Amino acid sequence: MKRREWLATVAALPTFAALGALGTLAGCATPALRGTGDLGVVVGRANGTLYLADTTARTLIGEVPGLGDLSHASVVFSRDGRYAYVFGRDGGLSMIDLLGQRLVRRVMQAGNAIGGAISDDGSLVAAQNYTPGGIKVFDAHTLELVADVPAAYAPGKLSRVVGLVDLPGRRFAYSLFDADAIWITDCADPKNPHTQRFDGIGHQPYDALVTPDGRYYIAGLFGEDGLALLDLWADKPTVRRILGGYGKGQAPLPVYKMPHLRGWAVAGRRAYLPAIGRHEVLVVDTETWQEVGRIPVAGQPVFVMARPDGRQVWVNFAVPDYHRVQVIDTQTRHIVQTLAPGKAVLHMEFTPRSDTVWISSRDDNRVSVIDTRNFTTLARLQVPAPSGIFFTARAARMGF
Image (cartoon, rainbow, N blue to C red):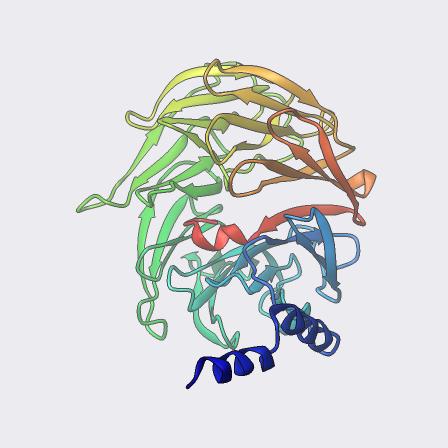
């Protein structure tokens, strides 16, 4: 091709600006393309609605109603971050398309449920249930039931299940509140699940977590001081007690709200845990699992959560101190800030690289977005009685 002909051909091609204009026109008919990495959801517990959030723009971008009783709802995400699975207190399991902003599927799988998990390969969704006690496992694409594991610990008795987490290899670990036990169910073949049982782990495990490396499953004990630790890497795993008797004979205060261990605080080689019935955060060495310190705080801790970079630990509280949030510097173990973002703080969620934390204040009907470095409020979003906040970054984290 001669140079003159080539120039004429190039001149006839649409410019980038023209292509952009065409794209704008096309966008009038179809939604703009976007990723899911900066999306999240806020649970509206008062009206059974999931509010969709853009964490970069710090705004709400949509809502999905009709999800039933969300008074103790939790959420997990598909591996690609597109779908949210919502576990309602009424036993409803809902699959939400975050990009389409719509309810895809919903099943009523139990009478009373408090959470769930998704398998490491993203193929299975498991729900933990109070009524009937046990777990149920579903195909993540269709919500078809593929496994039902009743938590039967005595003839005619089913235990309430708490502390459900995902483990490598399509496995799920969970605790039986009424049976003083930890179970691990292997769903490599979900039609034929295999369950390993650990009994006598301590009285009334109320919640649990798995460490970020997947090695330790730790259950908090409501019926006594201490926690139960299971080393999942051991050739023959056994449960051992840690932090026994941290109350040292002192009468605990009345417990107004059960503390949570999910989303727990690990910073370097230290773990920060709520002390049941005390105004303290326990500091634990994760190499020895021995207590190495205590931090007095404003009230009974509910969530004790580490900023993703580990530099800070944020704590919220049960009544009557549930309007406060305190920030602990993990280098000094001192409280460096006390905030009052609103009445009835129920949940906190950090953006993945630690720049902001989102805090729900149920009784003030708002979510506050706070800069974690200078503690200024960057945005306030109006949501009717917000509770749980969950970001799609959880899709890449074990135990979340």
